[in-house]
Image (cartoon, rainbow, N blue to C red; front, side, top):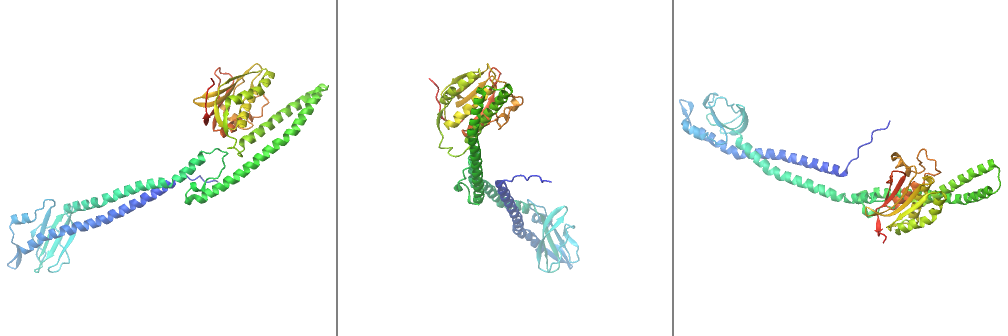
Length: 461
């Protein structure tokens, strides 16, 4: 049982996610540390001002009949407890715990010694108070508490002052990291672009200086693979070419002997067998010729050296001398509508392309039909097209007919199924596109080869 394929991962995405995660963790840790530092700074800033009213209350305590008494008018108490931002409360407890002044429900501080003061937090009436407590020599406890509005505001200001620059630095770091990663991965993009721009036959090794050091082992391994593929492809092409070449001589001899026998007087049944054998020999010879053409089209050796400016007009004109007699013998009207259009390519391969298009059209066009060869400019690009009045190719088969040895079902012509495969191979070698269109009259087939790489284009005249 095979496991499901793993989703491809992006190096850029992994690096950015790692960086963002680490920066967020650092920002979070900085926020926590800054918060505690801010709380401590706020308490240090405001605890001294909170202790001052407690000391004032302690200084205004008087002992009356052995009992402590706060000698401070209500107006003075109100002024002492006034705060614009926070609510301030106080409490004074006698040594026996009796509340002698202030609020009665403020919890008493514990574990205080004479002359000692302390600060602590307490929940009071659903609010959090910061309390300053001190114990005088007579064991009278004085407590002053205030809400934390000023402190919280100061903590917020410190957090904003510290975290906003940190967040800005983090965002800028992420942006710079994204740009840096993109710059660092640019060599990979160049390698990818180079590979995508190559034809299927270009098995040259990737230049080592085009890839970063980190992926040099991958490039070296890929180059070794390309080298093995090139050797295997060359071996296959040599075998195919040699086999087809070796078949040509005995097939030519067999064809000659069969033609000599057909010229002599033969019994009817013997002549019928000889004619069938002669047709099979011709078909085999034609297939051998096409195999040689296919091997040449696929061969990568000396591909660049053979490229030169080629006028499609001259290719079509040369083809006319060869195919017009064949068309006349088959009672087919072979016409030409030619204009000058020059492309960069291999003259022998372009001639082979045109020969296969014309041969294919003549084979599938019945007697009395017509085949028209065209070349010139279309959409500012050179093109060559061969149109016939044959049975046509169904839309569902128009892509498959370019496969090797594929023939449309019901076809009666003695084709090999290699002609259009050779055309596609040669077109790919020249950066051209091959398509099948319906003729303007709606009958037959029109195969169009549109060239994208233009060396020079000119119209007749």
